Amino acid sequence: MSDDGEESVIFTTKVELNSENIERVSLCPVYLQNRIRKKGDVRVTIVGNKIFSAFIHSQQSEQSETDWRKTDTPLPHSLIQLPYYIEVMCLQLTKELSLNFAAIKQKT
Image (cartoon, rainbow, N blue to C red; front, side):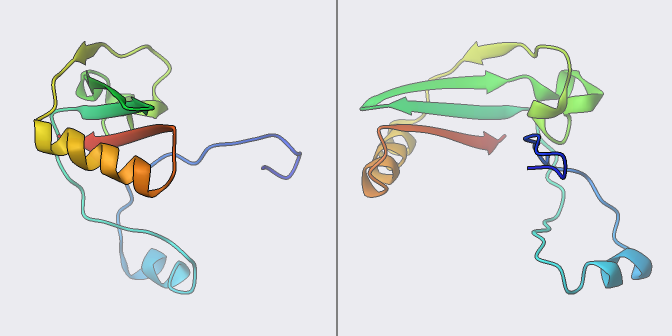
């Protein structure tokens, strides 16, 4: 929630670390990782025991290169078939967490 009570979302953002800003966040709870260049994103939606997988063409817009949710324009999606072992792992995860619905995202 923001200060005015409105819900808000923090998107994944590219940051450049240097001596000035690394010190500013040294005592803050942050999650940083190396940038991974990608061709797009894979979104796996699980409803019960059914799996729906899509490739999101996130690299078609500069706004969505880092986080596909960040763009103002709809991105093309393509249906894909995951390898069987990945489907099994996704189903195992949702069962272990006692979830009937899950949305899992992976960069590719």
